[in-house]
Image (tube, rainbow, N blue to C red; front, side):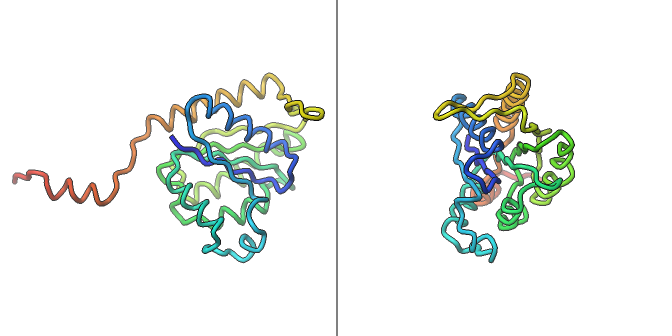
Length: 197
């Protein structure tokens, strides 16, 4: 299984990034291949000018197409997800998330921002034809403590339990989804099939 992990924070130090990193580590321990992208790694000009032919954008699009699932993590600003993430999602083709399982993850200053996942992020993912979108994880900033120096960040026990529970569901849903057939293989099977009327 292949998962594309997409971080929507423009900051190097990000609580949503902590959750995304922790999620990726958990999936890798379960034998899932995880490829991580951060919006800050894409040239700003490519995103702002919608350069579909940018090498970084083309690489991202190629991996999203091959992926079984997508993890999307974002901080919530002013009751919505990050603008940098929106510019990158706008570069995906209309049906980019069909046949994929999607797990949205968000962090915000208070639980007052919790509904931004349902009212801002999920509609954009649904417009990309995400056929199976999980409930998602929202954490307020008080549930994630940055580690001092090289120490790892700490998650509140309740958040850690919710995250790993959602990831288990995410992995199971990807494993049970039928793989779409390549059109060439489907055409060959139809031509070689025995038909009776």
